[in-house]
Image (tube, rainbow, N blue to C red; front, side, top):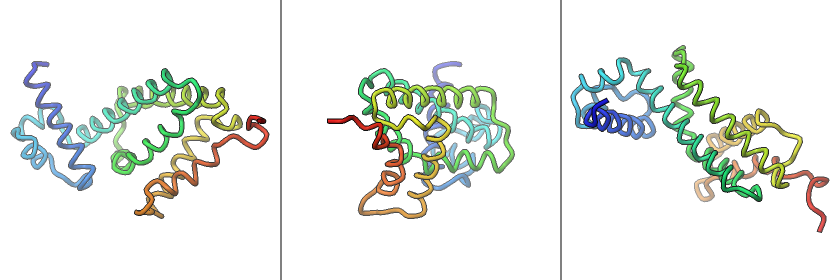
Length: 188
């Protein structure tokens, strides 16, 4: 891809990411083109259908989360990166979850690339969990699937019972269930 085409694609993705996060998925491709400062044909060349643009935004976000999880694993020796990663994931998830929900509801089959990116994220997340468990920061009787369900519960709690004066409060309450059990806590 030529440099100018690459820049246009990135500008379109950034514009779509912002528009979808603020206004939802109803923003038209023509409006995204206008905001990105490109012609509608440019958007349609890169993303022939709106679902393709939505999926590209989702895939990019999953890749970013995967990189964050991998960096946390590499830098984490004492398990202290696990909960901040979860809180960051939850605080940022509202708009991104809407993207995933929209794709699922529309019956869009995710591309192999998106599926691989999601698998990479799951593996990086599982590695981060194991590191935190080995360090004694997270209870050992949960696995990555359990934690994903708990994160979904925390996200739901944040959405349905927001505390504007204390953002993240409900998520913190839910995530506390991942702290080591009394038997697992170090004696001191």
